[in-house]
Length: 306
Figure 1 (cartoon, rainbow, N blue to C red):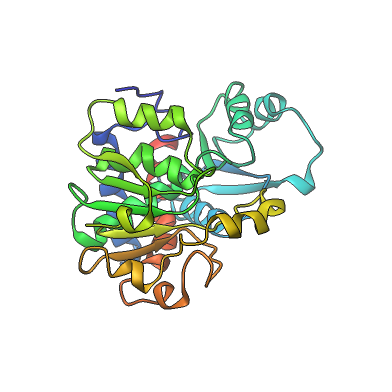
Figure 2: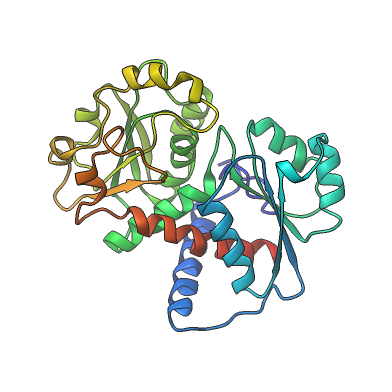
C-alpha cells in the first residue's frame, strides 16, 4: 500500500490504517481533555502559518484554535494581503519563518509546487481536488456516532468533488464501505478511483452506483455536499439541472439503514442538496462534523509539529 512521507498531510495517502486509528484515538482524547479544561503546551514557542487563497470559516477557526490550544502561535497569510508569488518562492520564504504551514488554495498542483520547496510540514486545508482534513473529521464523527467504523456503510450523494476524493482515500482505511452516486459528467477522478479500488491493506471499499436510491441501501450514514463548490459558480444553473434527483431528503433517508446519521461538510444550500428537514433531523451530525475539524487537526498538529 502506497504511503508517503509522514512530514506532510496533502491528500490522505500519507496515512496507513494504523496511523489513522492512532490519530483518531488521539483526537478523541484531546476532545475529552478540552471538555475537562486540560491545558496542553506541547507546541509552545512554535508558529503555524495559515495561507488562504479561498474564503474560510471552519478551516480558519479550527486550525487557529487547535494550534493555540496546544500552546502555539498562528499567523494568517490571506491572498489579499500579499503580492503574487510563485508557490515555490512563497514556500521557500514562509517555511523559514514558521514551524508548520496550512494552505487552503485552488488547484492541487499549486499545493504540490508549494510543498516542493517547503522545509517544514505542510497541511492541506482544501484544494479543488482534495479536502483530507474534512475526511478525518467525518470518520471521527462516524466513529463517535456508532462507537466503531469497521464494517459500516457510508453513502455519498452528489458531486464527485474534493470531498468524495478524500473519503475514497481515507474512509476504507477505517474499514468503512463507501457507496456513492454522482450525476453523469460529475464523477470522481477515474485514476484515483482505480487506485482506491485496487490498493491492498485496507478493510473498507469504494463502490459506485448509478442512482442515489441504490447507493443508500444499507447505509449507516448519508453524506452530501453543495452542488456548486467554490470556483464553479459560473456553472451553477447547469449544475442545478444536472443534480436534480440527488437531494438528501426524507424519502431517500428512509431507504437507508435504521438510525442512519445525516452528514454535510458545510456550508449548506438548504432545499437544494439537502432539505431543511434532514439538516435538522434528530440523527443529523452536521454540527458535530464541524466541531471535529478542531479535534482531528489538533491531533494532526500534535503529530507533525512536536
